[in-house]
Length: 194
Image 1: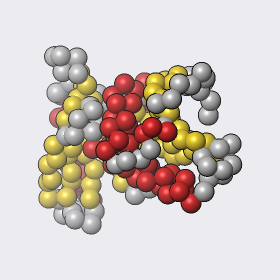
Image 2: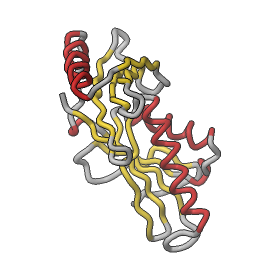
Image 3: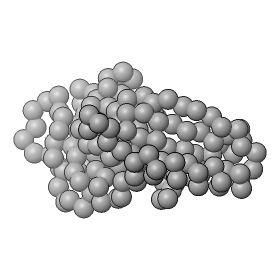
Protein backbone atom coordinates (compact mmCIF):
# COMPACT_ATOMS: atom_id res chain seq x y z
CA UNK A 1 0.00 0.00 0.00
CA UNK A 2 1.41 3.37 -1.03
CA UNK A 3 -0.56 6.19 0.57
CA UNK A 4 -0.89 9.52 -1.20
CA UNK A 5 -0.63 12.47 1.15
CA UNK A 6 -2.78 15.46 0.29
CA UNK A 7 -0.48 18.39 1.18
CA UNK A 8 -3.22 20.95 1.72
CA UNK A 9 -5.58 19.04 3.99
CA UNK A 10 -3.31 16.38 5.56
CA UNK A 11 -5.53 13.55 4.30
CA UNK A 12 -3.92 10.23 3.45
CA UNK A 13 -5.53 8.60 0.43
CA UNK A 14 -4.99 5.08 -0.83
CA UNK A 15 -5.56 4.78 -4.60
CA UNK A 16 -5.90 1.74 -6.83
CA UNK A 17 -6.56 1.34 -10.55
CA UNK A 18 -7.36 -1.38 -13.07
CA UNK A 19 -8.37 -1.66 -16.71
CA UNK A 20 -11.81 -3.14 -17.31
CA UNK A 21 -12.65 -5.56 -20.14
CA UNK A 22 -13.03 -2.54 -22.50
CA UNK A 23 -9.52 -1.30 -21.52
CA UNK A 24 -11.00 1.69 -19.65
CA UNK A 25 -9.15 2.66 -16.51
CA UNK A 26 -11.12 2.29 -13.28
CA UNK A 27 -10.19 3.77 -9.91
CA UNK A 28 -10.95 2.96 -6.31
CA UNK A 29 -9.68 5.06 -3.42
CA UNK A 30 -10.25 5.54 0.27
CA UNK A 31 -9.48 8.05 2.98
CA UNK A 32 -10.51 8.62 6.58
CA UNK A 33 -12.54 11.66 7.61
CA UNK A 34 -11.45 11.95 11.21
CA UNK A 35 -13.89 14.75 12.01
CA UNK A 36 -16.93 12.76 10.85
CA UNK A 37 -15.47 9.35 11.88
CA UNK A 38 -16.09 7.72 8.49
CA UNK A 39 -13.96 5.99 5.92
CA UNK A 40 -14.85 7.25 2.46
CA UNK A 41 -14.60 4.92 -0.51
CA UNK A 42 -14.72 6.64 -3.91
CA UNK A 43 -14.73 4.59 -7.11
CA UNK A 44 -15.57 4.81 -10.79
CA UNK A 45 -14.14 5.21 -14.29
CA UNK A 46 -11.18 7.60 -14.70
CA UNK A 47 -12.47 10.81 -16.26
CA UNK A 48 -15.98 10.49 -14.84
CA UNK A 49 -17.48 11.45 -11.50
CA UNK A 50 -17.47 8.35 -9.33
CA UNK A 51 -19.68 6.97 -6.61
CA UNK A 52 -19.10 7.42 -2.89
CA UNK A 53 -19.72 5.10 0.02
CA UNK A 54 -19.19 6.02 3.66
CA UNK A 55 -18.31 3.46 6.32
CA UNK A 56 -18.71 4.55 9.97
CA UNK A 57 -15.46 3.98 11.87
CA UNK A 58 -14.89 5.08 15.45
CA UNK A 59 -11.12 4.97 15.89
CA UNK A 60 -7.90 5.40 13.93
CA UNK A 61 -6.98 1.77 14.75
CA UNK A 62 -10.29 0.55 13.31
CA UNK A 63 -9.56 2.60 10.20
CA UNK A 64 -6.11 0.98 9.91
CA UNK A 65 -7.88 -2.40 9.82
CA UNK A 66 -10.37 -1.07 7.26
CA UNK A 67 -7.52 0.22 5.04
CA UNK A 68 -5.70 -3.13 5.28
CA UNK A 69 -8.86 -4.98 4.18
CA UNK A 70 -9.52 -2.36 1.47
CA UNK A 71 -6.06 -2.96 -0.01
CA UNK A 72 -6.43 -6.76 0.13
CA UNK A 73 -9.86 -6.53 -1.54
CA UNK A 74 -8.57 -4.23 -4.29
CA UNK A 75 -5.58 -6.44 -5.04
CA UNK A 76 -7.68 -9.61 -5.06
CA UNK A 77 -9.98 -7.94 -7.61
CA UNK A 78 -7.15 -7.01 -9.98
CA UNK A 79 -6.58 -3.43 -8.88
CA UNK A 80 -3.02 -2.13 -8.63
CA UNK A 81 -1.27 1.07 -7.63
CA UNK A 82 0.27 3.20 -10.36
CA UNK A 83 3.86 4.03 -9.49
CA UNK A 84 5.24 7.56 -9.84
CA UNK A 85 7.08 6.76 -13.08
CA UNK A 86 3.79 6.01 -14.82
CA UNK A 87 2.08 9.29 -13.93
CA UNK A 88 1.95 12.34 -16.18
CA UNK A 89 2.39 16.04 -15.56
CA UNK A 90 -0.14 18.46 -16.98
CA UNK A 91 0.46 22.19 -16.82
CA UNK A 92 -2.32 24.73 -17.29
CA UNK A 93 -0.79 28.05 -18.32
CA UNK A 94 -2.38 31.50 -18.41
CA UNK A 95 -0.83 34.76 -19.60
CA UNK A 96 -0.52 37.35 -16.80
CA UNK A 97 -1.46 41.00 -17.11
CA UNK A 98 1.91 42.06 -15.65
CA UNK A 99 5.28 40.47 -14.81
CA UNK A 100 4.05 38.92 -11.53
CA UNK A 101 0.31 39.27 -12.09
CA UNK A 102 -2.37 41.63 -10.87
CA UNK A 103 -5.27 41.14 -8.45
CA UNK A 104 -7.35 39.34 -11.10
CA UNK A 105 -4.44 37.00 -11.91
CA UNK A 106 -4.05 36.12 -8.22
CA UNK A 107 -7.78 35.41 -8.00
CA UNK A 108 -7.51 33.20 -11.11
CA UNK A 109 -4.57 31.29 -9.59
CA UNK A 110 -6.56 30.48 -6.46
CA UNK A 111 -9.83 29.65 -8.22
CA UNK A 112 -8.30 27.46 -10.93
CA UNK A 113 -6.37 25.46 -8.32
CA UNK A 114 -9.45 25.10 -6.11
CA UNK A 115 -11.78 23.98 -8.91
CA UNK A 116 -9.22 21.74 -10.64
CA UNK A 117 -8.32 20.01 -7.38
CA UNK A 118 -11.99 19.22 -6.83
CA UNK A 119 -12.72 18.29 -10.46
CA UNK A 120 -9.66 16.09 -11.05
CA UNK A 121 -10.07 14.36 -7.70
CA UNK A 122 -13.77 13.53 -7.98
CA UNK A 123 -13.20 12.30 -11.54
CA UNK A 124 -10.36 9.98 -10.48
CA UNK A 125 -7.86 11.68 -12.79
CA UNK A 126 -5.30 13.20 -10.42
CA UNK A 127 -4.52 16.21 -8.27
CA UNK A 128 -3.15 19.74 -8.39
CA UNK A 129 0.48 19.79 -7.27
CA UNK A 130 1.28 23.51 -7.15
CA UNK A 131 1.93 26.57 -9.26
CA UNK A 132 4.47 29.16 -10.26
CA UNK A 133 4.11 32.74 -11.46
CA UNK A 134 6.58 34.92 -13.32
CA UNK A 135 7.66 36.10 -16.75
CA UNK A 136 4.04 37.09 -17.40
CA UNK A 137 2.85 33.47 -16.99
CA UNK A 138 0.85 31.53 -14.43
CA UNK A 139 1.57 27.77 -14.49
CA UNK A 140 -0.61 25.37 -12.51
CA UNK A 141 0.83 21.85 -12.28
CA UNK A 142 -1.26 18.69 -12.02
CA UNK A 143 -0.11 15.11 -11.53
CA UNK A 144 -2.42 12.69 -13.32
CA UNK A 145 -2.79 9.03 -14.28
CA UNK A 146 -4.19 9.62 -17.80
CA UNK A 147 -3.05 12.74 -19.66
CA UNK A 148 -5.77 12.60 -22.35
CA UNK A 149 -8.56 12.32 -19.80
CA UNK A 150 -6.88 15.05 -17.72
CA UNK A 151 -6.75 17.51 -20.63
CA UNK A 152 -10.41 16.86 -21.42
CA UNK A 153 -11.38 17.14 -17.76
CA UNK A 154 -9.42 20.37 -17.30
CA UNK A 155 -11.02 21.95 -20.37
CA UNK A 156 -14.47 21.02 -19.05
CA UNK A 157 -13.69 22.45 -15.61
CA UNK A 158 -12.33 25.74 -16.96
CA UNK A 159 -15.32 26.12 -19.29
CA UNK A 160 -17.97 25.17 -16.72
CA UNK A 161 -16.60 27.55 -14.08
CA UNK A 162 -15.76 30.33 -16.55
CA UNK A 163 -12.06 30.32 -15.71
CA UNK A 164 -10.58 31.81 -18.89
CA UNK A 165 -10.49 28.65 -21.03
CA UNK A 166 -9.91 30.86 -24.09
CA UNK A 167 -6.67 32.15 -22.52
CA UNK A 168 -5.44 28.77 -21.25
CA UNK A 169 -2.74 26.61 -22.73
CA UNK A 170 -2.59 23.00 -21.60
CA UNK A 171 0.52 20.87 -22.06
CA UNK A 172 1.55 17.40 -20.88
CA UNK A 173 4.62 15.27 -20.30
CA UNK A 174 5.34 11.92 -18.72
CA UNK A 175 7.05 11.98 -15.33
CA UNK A 176 10.78 12.04 -16.00
CA UNK A 177 10.55 13.73 -19.41
CA UNK A 178 12.03 17.20 -19.84
CA UNK A 179 9.76 18.98 -22.33
CA UNK A 180 6.02 19.52 -22.30
CA UNK A 181 3.92 18.95 -25.43
CA UNK A 182 1.14 21.45 -26.08
CA UNK A 183 -2.26 19.70 -26.18
CA UNK A 184 -4.67 22.65 -26.17
CA UNK A 185 -4.57 26.34 -26.96
CA UNK A 186 -7.49 28.44 -28.17
CA UNK A 187 -5.02 30.66 -30.02
CA UNK A 188 -2.36 29.38 -32.39
CA UNK A 189 0.96 28.92 -30.60
CA UNK A 190 4.22 28.02 -32.34
CA UNK A 191 6.04 26.75 -29.26
CA UNK A 192 5.21 26.12 -25.62
CA UNK A 193 7.49 27.20 -22.77
CA UNK A 194 7.00 27.31 -19.03
